[in-house]
Length: 372
Image (cartoon, rainbow, N blue to C red):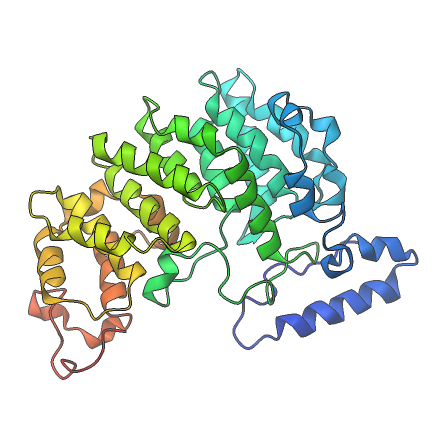
């Protein structure tokens, strides 16, 4: 029997908790064996060996380093297409020396464990192996492996406020969002974040990789880690000080800002403000820092920040920042960083005049309104 409950709680006006309870009741009535229900109702086995957070936290280093898939209980957890027992095969395909096989393995795994906004509960046990694939320079899908790690460690993001761009997990905690197996999505995200923290040293090394795409993806993954915050922050700052690639620099700034937001580093706002205020900094750094600062504070947008964005936000900068993962994640229409900044400054685009030639200027009649 396959029960489709993906995206429960995502639609406005839906009482996700009530639907989840109704769905669980339906399972109890439909299935004869009570243990079948136990596999799918996370409240019943929190803190047990059916809790993916517990399974990931207890995974020995030897299992991770040795790709000992057989010692991982994949079948206890699910993805978009059912049981997670096929995940080891997909991971092994990603390790293939054949580029087509490796790419197909990544595509199949991505479509299963990170499917249409859902994060399958089987995803966190895959994170340690994905990090090791990324660390192997002989592997083909290194960048894809890192981005998949980063995605399963975050919930889908809707930018309805400035803070949303740097939010990792759901703002409503564990309640309201469930995957296709009835598993609380935030607990899946929590387990994946813990897995990144446990193997943060692998991703930290990749911040110095010769491939700029690998460096960018490593920063994105590290920013979602739930622990080792001081070590990760220091590594991100060290890389930022020497990074010379236009497309990587703004991502490092946002990684520092996101990690700081998650771990309440009070100096992050001052750090980002110093960057966007410095006319000697490259445009992509100033705009990335402006984005980070806007998401870290609740202050009204100062005139000098608007002036910075007026000067820096150009079509050329949009092209340079097109790969920045924080922007790509929310820029589903390909409108670019200028459009996202406009949304952050004023979430109602109809309040601004398109004809005034100044995208950051206040629209007539709205001067006294708060920006958000």
